[in-house]
Length: 308
Image (tube, rainbow, N blue to C red; front, side):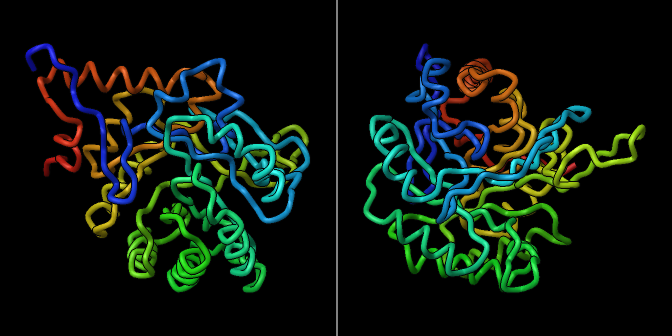
C-alpha cells in the first residue's frame, strides 16, 4: 500500500464511523468511566448504558457470575433515568469526537416512545439503539423481540417519536432471527445490531439454588461468538439495511470474522471488563491485518465470506 495507512472508515448510510469498532451498551457505562483508560475519540462509537424513562435500580445481588469462557449477568438494566441522563451524562458526551448511540428500552410501547421523544433535539446523540429484549407488560411479559409484529410496532413507535436514526438490537432467543430482522426493516429501522445476550442459568450444586438472584441472566463472552457470527451471517443475507455484529469479541480476529460474515461494524462488550483498552487494540489489529494483507480499505472484506 506504498506506506499508506489502510482506510478504516465505514458508512452506515445514516452515520459515518471513523472505524468499525463501537463499545457495546452496558459494558462501557457512559464513556466517562473509561476516559482515563482509553482514548475515547479513537473509537468508532460508544453505545451508552441502556436508558429507561424513569430511574431503575436493577436487580439485587448476586447479579454477575463467571461462566466458562463468559459471564452471566442479571444487572436488570439499572440506570438513572431519562431526566438525569440528559442533565448529568449528556454534557460529557458532548465533548467527545466520536459517534454516540443511546440504547433505550421500555416495558410498553408508550415507554419506548416517551424515551425516544425525550431525546429529540440533542445534537450529541447520533442514533438510538432499541433494546427489544425487554418483557412487554401489556402482553403478559413476552419479550418484544420474540414476535415480529411486536418488534415492528416498537420500531414504528420509536421512529414516530424520534428525530434520530434507529438501530434495533435483536434478541437471539428466537426460532429464526431473520424473521424479526425483516420485520423491523419493513417497519423502517435504519440498521440492526445483534446479538443481544443468550438466556442462561447456573445452579449452586451445594445449596441447590440458582447462583443469580434473578434465577436467569444474559450469557455473554467468547462462548457465544460462534452463535453470534452465524446469526449475523444469516441476517446480513436476509436484509438490505446495515448489520452491526456483536457477541464474544475479544480481539481483532474476532471482529474481522463478523465483518467477513456481513456486518458493517461491530460492538465490543464483555471484553471491556477484562481489558479496558481492548477496543483500541482491536482497531490497531485491524490496521495491521490490512497492512499485511495489502488491503487498502476495510470495506474490501465486508461480506466476503466464501462458500465451503
